[in-house]
Amino acid sequence: MRNLYSSDLAKVHYDAIIIGSGMGGLTTAAFLSKAGKKVLVLEKHYVAGGFTHTFKRKKYEWDVGVHYVGQVNLKDGLLKKAFDYVTDGKLKWSEMGEVYDQANIGGDIYNFKKGRKEQVEQMIAYFPHEEKGIREYYKHVSKVASLSLMFFAERTMPDWLSKSVGYFLRRGFYQYSQKTTYEVLSSYISDEKLIAVLCAQCGNYGLPPKKSSFAIHAMVVDHFLDGGNYPAGGASSIARRLVDVIEANGGKLAIKASVKSIVIEKNKAKGVEMENGDILTASKIVSNAGIHNTYNKLIKTPKSVGTEEINDLNASTSHVCLYLGLNASDAELKLPKHNIWLYKSYKLDQDFDDHSSDKNGIPSLAYISFPSAKDERWAATHPNMSTIQVICPCPYEWVKEWENGKWQKRGEKYEAYKEETKQRLLEKVYSVLPQIKGRIEICELSTPLSTKHFSNYNHGEIYGLEHSTKRFALPQLRATTPFKNLFLTGQDIVCVGVGSALFSGIITSVVILNRNLLVRINKYAKKNADS
Image (cartoon, rainbow, N blue to C red):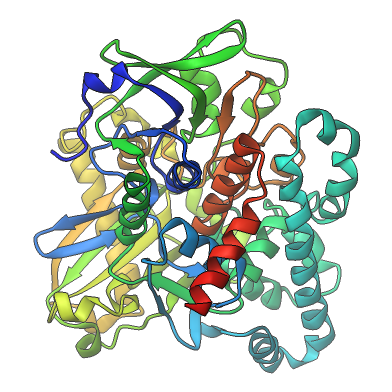
């Protein structure tokens, strides 16, 4: 198997060892290797990419975490330039069209249109009596997005500088991050239905309006205002292109490489110990394993002051996902490119709570995605086939009794639970897509235990730490750690999403290299635009 871990890797001293090949880890590895550093990425799973990887059943293929990405269609946008830099311009994107999200709330349909002006006008058309509040809302969304740049840039500062001036760079952002989404919206919008519509994409960050920080809501909304995009060739194209760049610049990736612990001596990271006992050494250690895993599993020395606050943060939501393979094309079945956010009612918070307390009920909310329709290359390589994914929140407690079982061998009771859940989700899908009845060839359900097995997150969470007001108040969520030469990357030090994970890689690389990488990114973009 290509890139399979070998003990021979322990014979070399590296400039940097990166634990985990999620988007943050691979991005960090790409920047460091392009800067001439000797890099090794260690991945526990048998495939690289974290939530960017895909899996297959027969001739069908699905993504597991990349459902759409914003701003990569903007030629002069920073995210597009950054992706081009870390993939040497080899990663291409398929645009989702004029509508990228559709909210179906109790049977009422609302489209989220591409373009700030277009979306504002569309929402005013739906709720003309709330025009003033709608315009105020989108103004604040833009303001938070602008303030977030300074907020996260502060995380590249040395600790001593952050302690002296960091507060002043964060305080503008704090005005919004320390209020819930509902608090902010209800201050200038009185129509509860409109508030629900504007929050319909809250599944993208895992918390309903009265529990989420307005900062994450605004950043996610702003991220998609110029439309949604999908990696051409599928989500795994992202990891493949990044790995190509890492290896082309002398870096290495090892799969089935399970790290037991980070070796720390006198408060200084020296290397990693593998599950088989190998000790690998490096000048810098970067963990992309999640902040809870890093501090509570990988570090064996006494915890430093401050980690208690991090441990007080809850994990984000866990979920079940239904993967459907259909024996007809997207065109024949008239499947859309846009996502469908399907809600029972306009009472989003109550529906979230009701669903979480009713293990055997019909889900009151679901997210439906059409990866094959989004991918411009799918039809040529998979004729007369299409795929659908249906995601629904699932508290980890619902599957906890089977957590000690082996993957795909957890027993009849677990399989019965999955089958019952599968049928409930199918009923939900048929309510909006009746044309797919009789066309399903593959129907498979994953639970939080699958996510835990592959991502190593304790509760099968998909978004790392929950995006509450409490999360954004902690300055410890940054690239540096209390241990010298140990760094963090990944969504926990920024926020949810592929783009955010990429920026976490930039932040961590800036801290390690002590260089302004934005200059390099812009220089690369200008050079390739002129050539």
